Length: 574
Image (cartoon, rainbow, N blue to C red; front, side, top):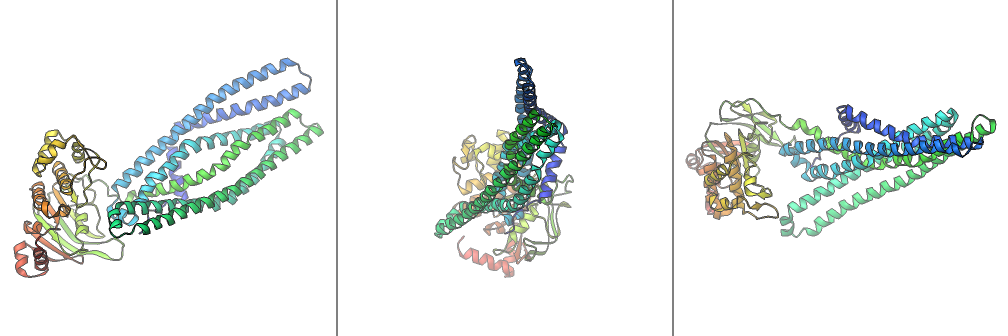
């Protein structure tokens, strides 16, 4: 299985820069509030340094009054600016995240089925769930802290240089030590974070597969093997997390060493300046306090790289999904000339090596009802998916009224598959998925057309789906056929749409399918060959190629492959 792509660090940050560039006003306002908040934190320390020098010069008690006023005003302004800065930063991050989440889910819902089949739905769920949540936590918790710390660090260094350029230079001596710490940590931790996110995705994939196939797991008594696989995946993720924590602990030691280097350099330089008469005690004290106050913001900057790395890994995974937008066929504005369905030289392979369809040529006239039959793996569902626009052929073309099927709206071509999902909520809203503005009368008429009025009309306002009233397989299929009626497409594709009904309800469901598709061009993947009997034409696929076609009676009389399939099916009494 090939997983979904992961964007490179450059691609992820390019996307982020574009998002910020698209909001210049918000970015400027957020940065301005952050600068004001940082300046308000620096001013009191600067004022205290002046107070120290005034006291040493013999100033009276009155000297403390203006300093107190400055500190109080700065504290009030700083508190207001800090609150505004955090609110603006969080709002900016949430808006960018909201757009990212909506776009990612939009792409995920419109990805071709083949892409999801190859990548695994667990990986996709992990990205739109856990990864988006990780980015959200960073946007609301980490980002405001990082920006506040960054502004305070820069302004504090500027203030130290303003006191005396030599004190500012002494404070800058810590920068190389911090840089070395980051250069040691980042190259080692980034791959581990990426591996940890991938391990979480693998664990999610295993869990989804186990839950979706729980009946099969129980039937073959494979519970222990699946639990063991989940244990192994969980252990891998845990070991990676422990490895990151070990790296982080060693990183903290390097950060503490950098703090010692910077503070020691300032104190030694200040002592020398005071001793030589080139500086004051107040300036040295202010510089030392400014640098000491940087321990927390610089520590926040350094330590949040842990969260930034994790958010960066998640961002690369989510942006990787966005990069799949090229695989989604664009909506088509051109309208088909008619409801004919034509395949010309269609070939297709899921892995690029093993052909599933080979040079398929087929024309279905407008309003014609055609059944696809063949053994398992013959390519029936693949051809039906291409007809519905869910897959694009590797070679050749699939056209409805002269227009490629990929990207056509449901009002032109719609599919009803064997796997029908019943969405949670009132039954009438489930039906309105096909036509949101449908009236109650239109919904009732659609149900009556497919023969579901006896059980469904009284349940229109009843919640159905997971955790609510359960529907039988036959009822769920009738629901899907009623949606087809409401959608009213020119071309209908039924992919074994009556296979799950069982023998008892199959005849009634086939009647429902005939009623729903009456007057439409219809392509049926026939699980029950009674559907082939009632079709205008039968197409027999074997190994991805059409080997027979014609009316049912003609093909049975010909004694070929279709006659063998029909005879075997009839002998089972079905």
